[in-house]
Image (cartoon, rainbow, N blue to C red):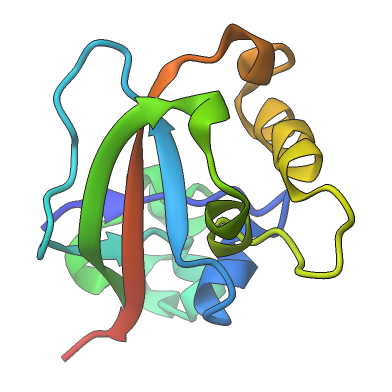
Length: 140
């Protein structure tokens, strides 16, 4: 099983876990799509965050990069994958990305968000991305 990480400093992980974020874009970097339609992917969270106390001496205690996917309680199921340029995002997809619906200019809000997550200038570079639509699922 694979895992996926969502930024918490921009509250994206919280949005996913609340069911408010149902899409994510990942830079393509000339590589094939990492996740496939129908694939179940673990949401990476620190062991401390999920209360796995017996893992307190491991690297995953404070860093979700090092956690085992099979120990994660929350998953997403990928329901669609598409490749596009970053600036081709629709207003509806901005909302699926977690942009609040009461924002006057959702695309501008998303542009600022993507620059905070992937580095200043990402929006203006307009890179190729994979857009993954997903639904939140729980571990069986």
